[in-house]
Length: 72
Picture 1 (cartoon, one colour):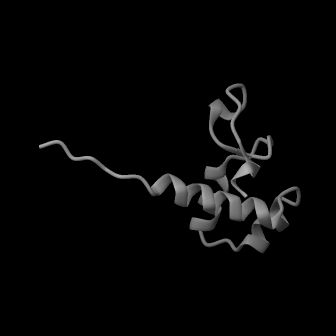
Picture 2 (cartoon, helix red, strand yellow):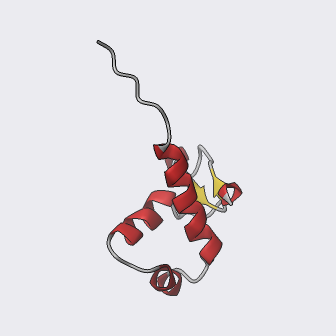
Picture 3 (cartoon, one colour):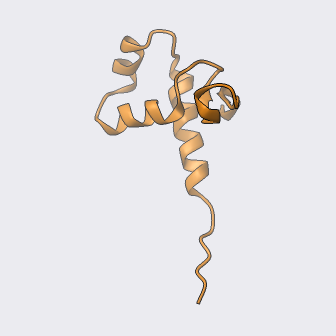
């Protein structure tokens, strides 16, 4: 599903977007964090699909899963 996340240096400052559209992964995550349901997001952005929202969550989870090295 993460293949729905695209990167284009000429679009949205190279930030991750959904299927080449000008809606960033962060935009969807912000809406979810604000309490909107996937159905409400799709109602407001009818060009999005449920798989797009899941791809945003998958992408965010993958980004959070990396080791943090602490220098002493």
